[in-house]
Length: 124
Image 1 (spheres, helix red, strand yellow):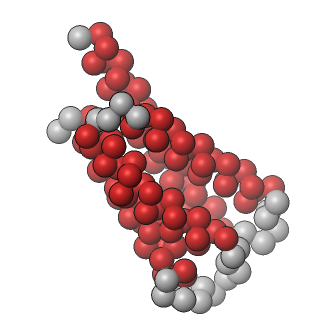
Image 2 (image 1 turned 135 degrees about the vertical axis):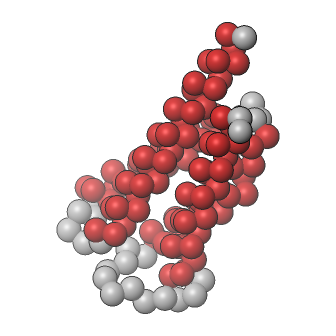
């Protein structure tokens, strides 16, 4: 399997997980047994949908804009993590921090795959 397909598959999975997590609260009205920051499930659902339907598709097709879309996703998750760790430090649920950490780690891996893949293709 080509590296861009691996990156796309990973993006699709991590995006799907965000859709599932955010969708349970936003769309299904699930009440969690911990405090939920109002905007966070909406963010998770929105970025998850963008990841599944846009970024993963761009990665799969190896579109020229795919690395920028992946970087934008990584930066977005990192910015939200920074906000959670600073402005919401006392109220954010540990599960939210764990989920955001997994997303950031996945996007670092995706970016790594993309960088290696692009460099390898340039040198050929």
